[in-house]
Length: 184
Image 1: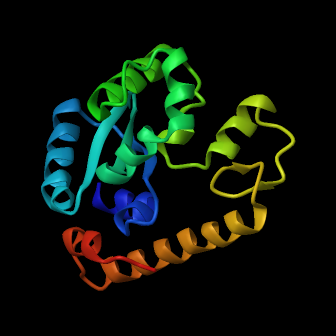
Image 2: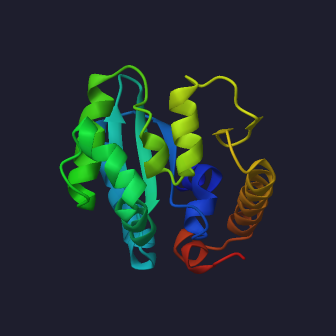
C-alpha cells in the first residue's frame, strides 16, 4: 500500500494539499485493515491519516488527509454553508467523514462535495456542480473554473512533488520520513 500512497498522495504527504484519494485492490478486508493500521503508524505522527471510505467487490477507496488542513477547510464559512443543507451534521471532522462515507456508499457517483474534502478551491467545486462537469476552462487534477494560471502552477507543483517523493522512496527514504519533508 505504501507505493500507492506515495504515487497518489505525495502532495498530501508533503503538506501542500489537504487530501488525496485512490482506489486500492481489495484481497480481504482483514488484510486491508492491517495495511491501513501499519501505514497510519508511520504517517499519524505527522498529522496525516489514511482511512477507508468505501469498499467495493474488488477495490477499496482510500482517503489520505492532513487532519489540521481538512479541519480548516471544513471551518470555511462558504464550505459550511454548502455542507449543512445537504445533511452534514456539523463541522466535526469525524462526523463529516462518517457522513461522507454514507453518501459514498449510497451512490454510484461521487457526491460533488468531495471536492471540499480534497481541498479543491470553492469556485471549482461550485463551478463543477453548476456546469455539471462541463464548460471548464482547464483540466488538471480536477476541472478548473477559475484562477487558471494559479491552478496550472499548483498542478505542476503537485506533479513535481510526486516525482520527488517517488525518487526519494526509491532511494530508501521511509514513508514516515517523507511525511516530515515539507516541499515549498
